[in-house]
Amino acid sequence: MSRVLTVGAAQMGPVARAEPRASVIARMTALLQQAARKGCRFVVFPELALTTFFPRWYMPDWSEVDGYFEDAMPNEATRPLFEAAVAMGVGFYLGYAERFMEGAKVRRFNTSILVDAGGAIVGKYRKVHLPGHAELEPKRPWQHLEKRYFEPGDLGFPVFRAFGGLLGMCICNDRRWPETFRVMGLQGVELVALGYNTPVRNSVAREAEHLRMMHNQMSMQAGAYQNGTWVVGVARSGPEEGVDMMAGSCIVAPTGEIVAQTMTDGDELIAYDCDLDAGRYIKETVFNFAAHRRIEHYGLITSQTGVVPPP
Ligand code: ING
Image 1: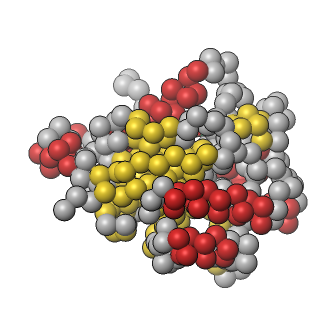
Image 2: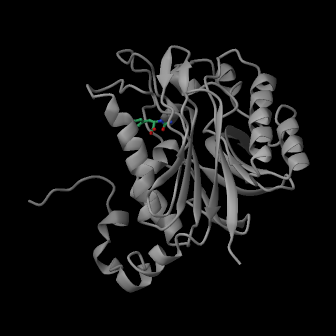
């Protein structure tokens, strides 16, 4: 019996700094309704979907920073989204800023959750690869302070049994690191859901603009093919608080082919019937890990962080 999961990629256009969560939730619910009409059983939202991409600003006042975080999930603001999803029988991936107390210590993560069609949180992931910097860099046209506002994820790259298959998650910059997909590939992942917030232009180096989209697609296509998995990448896009954010949300097959892609840089839903067995022949032949990998030669990948050239 084929395991086809109809998946929706719910791209979101700009979220203003002052946009209330209720407004964002209403937009997300409308995208869920579109997805349900297309027969989707699982919908992927962007990274930090509930607020504007706030790491673009240096905020010395931590109470202002914490205004962008969720202290519980679901909570009063997001419960309508969970309830709407349950009413439609649709599960979803949600990216948000997670904050909680551990004794007297405040913990803050760039987090995503996997929510099943019954509204239960069946998986959680915390972003491992945090790009950017931790201190104010005045020379930048905008900041990228993820290293200031979040800790590196502490949950690894887990894979969850959900929606009839093996689903994994990552977040934005994670997709640029092959280790992200390989660790999930070694758990047999069949679909990786990820949200991203990526500016169209490189703010720290002279770089032709077309390369941004190429690097985005190449990273996800390679991750898909080299691990025989579907990859669903969903943008927060459009002109947000003076920074143009890249669109290009897409659904990538285990062959590495992009099978669906958004046309706009606003709120837009695309969907595809993802056969979770489509990656089987890849996992059993070219990327049959058990038959072909030689881990005795891979030691540097986990024993060394930076580059050490030969003497
Ligand atoms: N955003 C960007 C991303 O990885 C970035 C940051 C862009 C890093 C381009 C390097 C190159 O897509 C987030 N939120 O990680």
